[in-house]
Length: 95
Image (cartoon, rainbow, N blue to C red):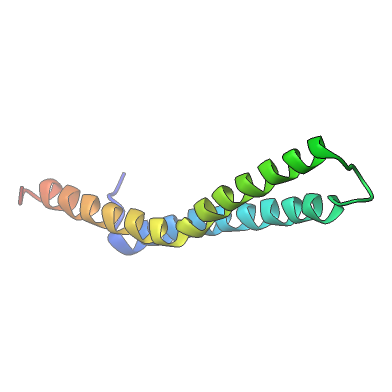
């Protein structure tokens, strides 16, 4: 089995991240539907307000996580490239 080159490795990382981004988009769309049905016509009172406040707080945290993915993608690609280069040097006897 051959050692993948850095370009192939980067493409694999990008493909995986594209799948994650598509799933994140699906989750965001589903959560928007939940948010859209929240309101005075569905459930009212202190308990409903507390639930909505908790929901909004969790959505802020979740969106912050989702928004961190592009930078994390670049960090993972850089690490994978570094690890692959080290593996290539070791494989070719240039430890």
